[in-house]
Image (cartoon, rainbow, N blue to C red; front, side, top):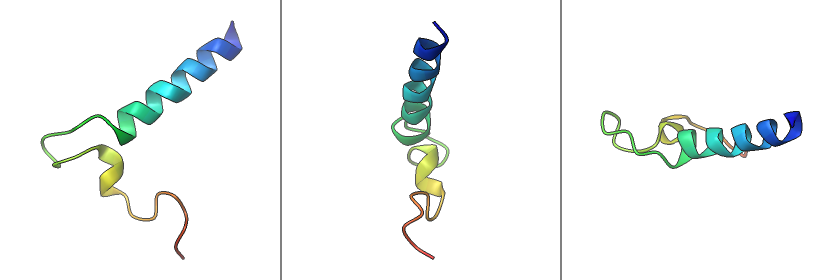
Length: 41
């Protein structure tokens, strides 16, 4: 279903950006973004 596809994509995207190690940058892509969680102003 469309809802299942959306949920699967959301989980995959989180893994891709937060857990997949990228050797060129020495960590996951999200580690290069400052204030990703929006906690700081």
